[in-house]
Amino acid sequence: MNIDYVISFSIKGDSGKNKATREKSKLLSLKANSFKIYKLDDLEILPMHNKVFKLAVLFIFEFYYLFKTIFNNRKPDLIFTRSFFGFGTYLISIIYNSKLIREKHGDFYEEALILFKKNIVTKFIFRLIQKYKLFFLKRANGVIFNNPELENSYNDKYNLNKHVKTTSVYNGANTEEFEIIDADKAKNMLNLSNNTDYFLFIGSMSKWHGVDLLLDTYNQYKKNYIDNTKLLMVGGKDNTYYHYLKDKYESKNIIFTGKVPLEKAKLYINASLIGFLPVNNNRTSPGSPLKLYDYIACGKPIITQVDTIGYSNIILKYNLGITCDFRNSKSASKKIKEFYENLDKEFYRRNNRLVAEENLNWSNVINEWLCFAKKL
Picture 1 (cartoon, helix red, strand yellow):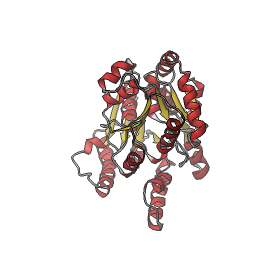
Picture 2 (spheres, helix red, strand yellow; picture 1 turned 120 degrees about the horizontal axis):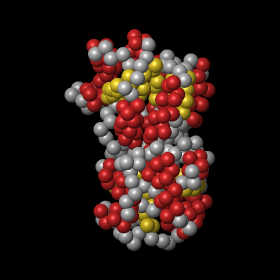
Picture 3 (spheres, one colour; picture 1 turned 135 degrees about the horizontal axis):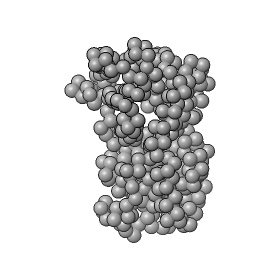
Picture 4 (cartoon, rainbow, N blue to C red; picture 1 turned 30 degrees about the horizontal axis):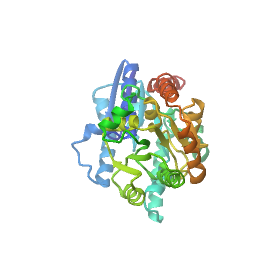
């Protein structure tokens, strides 16, 4: 089977999206007779220093895939894609009668209204873009969502399942890159105190991650309880929202590290006692957070938001930690304290690593993708 994976973004960085895409690409290549990934990195010589240029390059990328595939007479049997414009993969699927499966990780219109200024003009533009994206989404053979809530939303709002088959598959754990390291050793390598128990949030700190809820909860926790814990806020894009959080919440007990490379991220997870996984209910789907899988691959227990598909259901099913309501800082801080005081580190070290290796790994994710493709 010839498989193409067409991605209209760079996969060089250490963001969750970058790491996840590299894993999918690696495992798809092992399943195919012939595998080829087309990514925005292939066009890195083109200028992308502002949004206008970036959109232009994304448009050119579609022609790049279209013409390169035809020129090489590649004839893919199966195309997986996560691209902005989408017409290149659609035309190739028509020309070569290939199965076309699109990844969907969010609702463009909904997220644009959260991230950008809203007025009549921008709303009109966002709606046009959404209609354009839906046109090509409905002409795929299948769509893979990363969260059932998002799949249900698209089927309810846009009647997507009347035009194309859909399924939902969560992310997975990379148990090769993320492994258990002795906590004291990790602390020493990061110059952290061996006498402090560190709680951890790691990730990009977008508005829908509920980071502000976690920070309010931890401040309430330190107000109620005197102990030797500190909260590490690792990662975050260098943007206005990150600096707002840092200016408002940074203290002797809350440490913002800024963006760190992958090697350091692994050390921070292993140096920490508990991984936090909050979420803000300001969009339809909370997504499938890669940090969940990074935490468990390192054998760390997780405290996540209660009643949240893709978060709490996984934590409770596999006994990976506990849930609380970060929107209620008083009750959440109490649950955190109880969990902290009664924590069985060795149980979670063994259990969570085993679940990452046997149940929630990337190999199982790609097997689900290919089983879905066979049914189309």
